[in-house]
Structure formats: C-alpha cells, structure tokens
Image (cartoon, protein in one colour):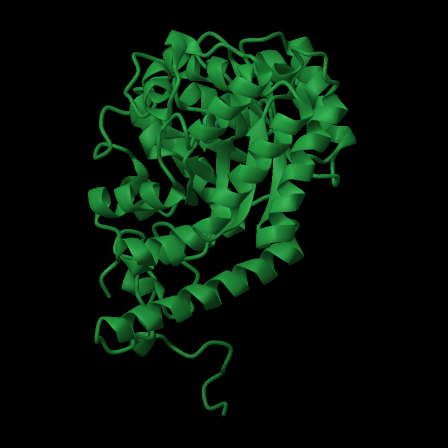
Amino acid sequence: MKVTREFLERMPKTELHVHLDGSMRLSTILELAEQQGVKLPKGAKDEKTLAKAMNVGEVCDNLPDYLKAFDVTLSVMQTEESLYRAAFELGEDAAKENVKYIEVRYSPLLHTQNDLSFPVIVEAVAEGLREAKRKYGIMSGQIICGIRHITPESSLRLAELCVAFKHRGVVAFDLAGAEADNPPKDHREAFYLIRNNNVNLTIHAGEAYGPESVHQAIHMCGAHRIGHGTRLREDGDLLNYVNDHRIPLEICPTSNVQTRACESFESHPLPFYMSYGLRCSISTDNRLVSNLTLTDEFENCVNAFNLGVGDLRRLMIDGFKSSFLPYRKKRTVTAMAVEEFDNLVREFEDKQGEEHHDRYPPRLAQESTLLTHGETPVDGVPAIPKEKAKPRGKKKGAK
Ligand SMILES: [Zn+2]
C-alpha cells in the first residue's frame, strides 16, 4: 500500500512531546495581543510579519535563539482566558488530525507576570483540554515543566504543584530549557519529590548536550522517558540500556534540525533507533515555532526514511505504549487504535486496488526471521528455526 498524506492524517496518533507556549496559532496571538494591548515584535500586524519576527520554521543558531520565539507567545499567555484558549485550540488542532491522546507541557512559572497563581494556571489549561475532549473526544494530560536555566528552588515549587495535581489533570513532570551548562542533577531535589510521590517523569536530554545528560536523567533523576535523546547514539552502552529497559524516546526531528541538535533531517538517528528496536514516538515539539502539524512531521519522516505501513504501525503502537496513561486504560486504547489503523489500511488497499495483506512487516524495525517462532530472542544466542526445533518437555516416546 502506498502511504499517502491522507493516510497519515487519518491514522490514529499520539503526541507526547508538545509545548503549549510553542504551539499557539498565529491568528490567536494577533487577536490576544490586540485585546490585551500587548506590543508584538517589529510591529507585526499580520500572520506573515509575525511569523517572520518569531523565526517560525527557521533554523536557529542554537537552542537559546530558538527559545526566543517563546517570549512572544508568553507575552499574551498571562491570563486565564488565554491559557484556556491556547489549550483548547491545541487540543482542537490535534484532534482534527486524529491525535487520540496528547500530553501538553508548559511551565506555570512562565505565566505569572500578571500574578496568576499556579493552581489557577493549571486549572485554566485543564479546562481548555477538557473542553477539547467534550467537543472532539481527544484524551489528554498535562506535563508540568521545571526550567533548567531558572533556579532549582523554582523546580521544587513546580514539583510540589505537580504532586498536588496528580490525577487531577497532570500526568508528569519534565525539565525543559537550555540544556548546556544546566545539568539535570542540579534539580535533583525536585526529582526526588516527584519520585517519592510516584509521579511520572520525563526529561529533555541529549538534545543540546551529549549522552551524559541522558545518563544523568535516567540514573540520577529517575526519568521514565527521554525528551529527544538525539545524541544518545554517541554512547552505545547507554543506548543498549535504554533499549533493554524499554525507556521511550520522544522524537522530534524537525525541531532537532532547527535547534541544530542534528545537522539535517536525513542525518537524524530515528531510522537507526527504530532498526535497533528502541521505543520511539514522533511529536512536533512546537507546532508554531517549527511551523508544522504532526501529520507534516510523519510525512517528513516517511519521505526522508522511506517508512512503510509496518513502520508507521510500530511508531503508532510505541506512541500509545509510551504514554503516561494508566496501564489498563493504555491497553484498551492501544487495542482500539490498532484496530482503527488496520481498518484504515484495508480501506486504502481497496481504494488503491490492492489485495488485502494480513501483515505489513516494518521495513526499518524488522526483526530477524530466526526469532519469529515463539522463541525468546536472547542476544548472542541464535534462535532455532521452527522446522528444526525439537519438541520441548516431552520425553522420548511420550505422546
Ligand atoms: Zn521540548
């Protein structure tokens, strides 16, 4: 089956790594700025000039440059209404491209310029996401971000907030911001509180800094997932650890190119990670700043890495598996997504005049055929092909 744009748009998806303040609509920023009397940079009056003023979709010199666009979005995200609206519209945009479950992250610390309290901020975002669920059925969770270039004390305050709102709309804690010179271990007290209260933890790591950052995130901070992990490929031993423990990577290739964590889209480690069996999911990181939808990002990956239907199915399943949904719910939701995906494949096979296939093996994430007969694959121990396997647990002559 040929993978088309329409197929990518309609396939069920998750988005696990998307920043609220990096994913607003340009039109909303313009409207809010006018309502609130906020001055936009370079006197931007329309979407085109605003996009230019914010470096939307452009390759930046470094991560701090990339983060500058957030000053603009944050300037209009200081009221309950604007937070509600940003959250609802992000849910709406995602639902329209069949994202079934989204985890939206932001730091309440950056929305207090008009003295909004942390709980009011979290509630405003929660209400926006709830409204998106009521209208479109999209499931969601909030991830509260500590900011690594702001003080560790502020991370601790945010961790406390996260604990208070656990099971009340918040699903995890994260550490975001400029990675170089700001190691995650500096914020270890916040992580300790998070772990002590059995809260999920994901950390931006291996993006603007090397694999040491991933190592710290996992071993010193207790991260359950890694945001990006682009430079994890530089440390094979750690890569195997991440793989063996099924630690999910939240992959955002376009963003990595924009922040120069990766030289080009084609040189992104995603195909290597997939072929090696790492648990990867695809996200946009910042829909506005990177100027793309999740469908766009899937399309970019299909074009650059020649992903087939089997690879997309693998990515979709890994996205659901990596989510911070409770386990039993996750199983149900994943099974429903798989059924919807397979039905969609059959619909497209009919449309393209193709016969139905029972199975689409992943092109990239393929496994050795020697390992497909119910044998447990163990590194270094070749599995026995089925036809040559001797029956187990039966003595000679037993029936
Ligand atoms: Zn991010």
